[in-house]
Image 1 (cartoon, rainbow, N blue to C red):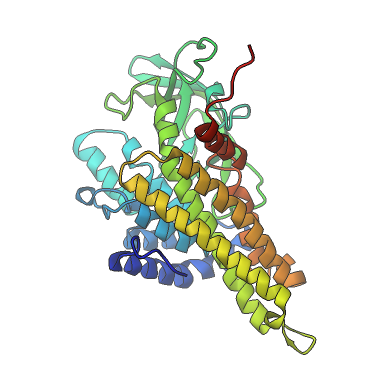
Image 2: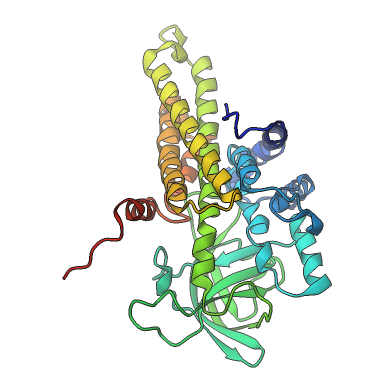
Length: 394
């Protein structure tokens, strides 16, 4: 695995190597044990990740974090995803959520410090049964009752709803908007709750998934759930659509890093298997069909990685890169499905069993084409930048 000299400083190489060692020694054995039985990420592994600082990579040092950027965040995410994508995902519940932490003063500062250690994490309830890619269709309502919001409505695809310490719920807080302005009037409301439970006034059930094990993804029903109005919450009430969509640029770089990690895990497993598996009196790694598959897989992984490095650097530099973020998320996700599928093919029948991790990488890679904006949504973003918005019929 290589990296462009302009990106990979000595410090970043040390961060990458430390994350790789941690993932292979601490994450991979747990993933191999628990993913086949759909077990949750254990708290002792979370504690070790907290000691490494992985929940606070982008949290400022004065709040107990590492004070680093998206580049380092993506470096670490790739290494963790190589072993278990859910572990590479749970670190976002600190790094992406610390701005949403409720409260003020010393109380809030203490929560941020806990978040940097992985001891206070969030979940996001954005999508609904009828609102996924189209967040303007969000119908879950919140109305003011004195100093509280009262939330009523349904949410779907809320991963970690039970394990988190708070849920950030995207709600409609105005009257139904006029046509063409559905994105106006959405507010992100923080609902704190006991860890291991759903909030009072909220019921739900885990969604039966085909992958992304390590934690549960929930369907939720809010029925008069109450949460304090945060007078100093980040963002203006009614304008959450803009903060949610602006945060997707970095989230898509993170998804690209996870896709690359999954693909790399599948490639490394395929290489090891091809060297050991004997057919027709020789290792299958000797056959050109296998060698060319591996060459193509490695090339596609490296191409995605270099684009991801560029996007992460742009985000850290404060430059807008919506198009390039869409490109890297689209390309890396599509690449991950291809590469993991090819790896499974190299393993043959063995790959179609739970005796090898490649089936896990394959199942999880399929999800990267869906969450954080589907591949089709990324194509729309890219084409809109290149061609302008589609013309309306006259």
